[in-house]
Image (cartoon, rainbow, N blue to C red):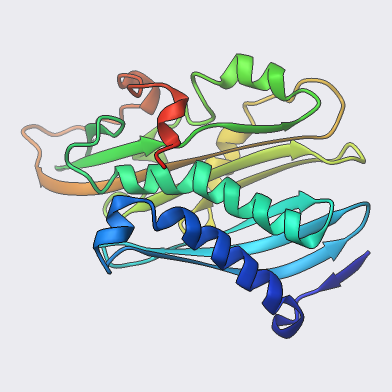
Length: 253
């Protein structure tokens, strides 16, 4: 396998990734009307083996302050196709959900609250579309398309809601490699997320062929108050009302 992480060698692909990204986000009203919204991409690695794999880093800046940073790996027949695929995945799966938690009037965000000890934390949550790639992708979408990977997530147990973070980005990925190896990845903001990895242990992949599944969930803590009574309450996401609308709403441009 040939691989490079040299920024000079990858500069043309980074330029392509950013051009592709900007062509899309400039059509989104928030980006077109406010300098507080910005997105950028950088290709951090390109590998060649039976095709090309590009690892692309993304940064999203919003009015909340702290930027959202993420890395997506995607395949293609050549380096350019791999970079375009990574940009497309980020635009389809991460960006719409990240934007939804910023609006007080977005019908696709869910409002709720969770009690931890003597404090009640209020939040706004948005779940991204589920992505499945591989020979058994249709089976996955039929089984998980409406529920998603976060169905059994317990917010109180899984998130450090007491922290003064402007937002929480949860990312779940699991799959089967071509050699049959199973892998799982749970990420919270820019670090490992043991609770997310544990959640993925509940899912059994169908078939025996290569498969990849991924989904994002964004949460913004909107406030806190003293609890009316003692005793921890930890509602699961599955107990909330389902997101309104259909998957096509993510295609906002």
